[in-house]
Image (cartoon, rainbow, N blue to C red; front, side, top):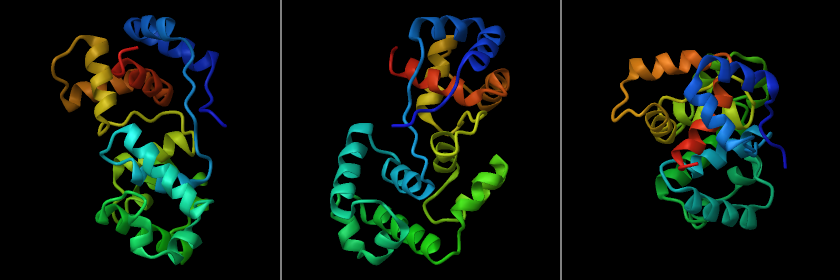
Length: 201
């Protein structure tokens, strides 16, 4: 298992920029979050996880691995829509996965090239796939490409973690961006802690 890598430099910077986050970091300790280095596997995993609980996503993901083995664009492109859907996916999500599989297997989208591109271009290219929006692309940036400075404004748990950390009942976009700038250039590490805070840790 590979985990998102961060260490003293990231922690020191975040603690120096935000005393409330510093206290949370001291309380929580180091956070280990598994990453999925293979971009296609990570893409399918994140489509599966859209708008459902982690437990439900884990169940569907286990069924997909049992049915298809290694998750590759070629295997999922060759599968029928019904075979994908039978893993516990909605018709819509199964369609998104099939479309992405076809695009990657057919060379329309070159996932391997994304590693050399800036975050904004990665988001643009991934968002060209049906069913893949900014949130899904940002999750791939963190949990596959290990980009250091991603704080997803569309992630409800991130926003909930911020509201809890700063004692806010609401969080408008301008305030969100102000906090995110405070964490830069290590926003992804801050995100790991905001997720933990949202879980009550």
